[in-house]
Length: 119
Image 1 (cartoon, rainbow, N blue to C red):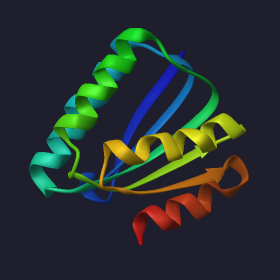
Image 2 (image 1 turned 90 degrees about the horizontal axis):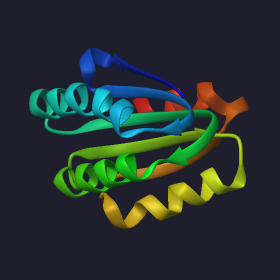
Image 3 (image 1 turned 60 degrees about the vertical axis):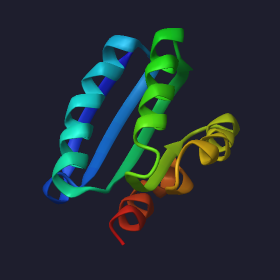
């Protein structure tokens, strides 16, 4: 599993790159900088990039659900960049858990996703 969190636009955009299965430990690397950005800006945007992504383990899924409930209205936009049809379905699955505008992009459209998240 590989996991990288990067902040752009002075922390207003959180870019997360993940491959393999997301674990609770990796997810806990994502939460502190994301919550700090929310505290600073009120609302943020997230660009979630997957490569060989295999989903969440049970601990990470629980952390994700808790995060989504706590920050239901703090995410303006969520771009998911993926490589399979189930990841596109993940964008639809996320809708009830956030007020964010969610859009899916294929890997070849990564730059379009970055442009969209900044708009």
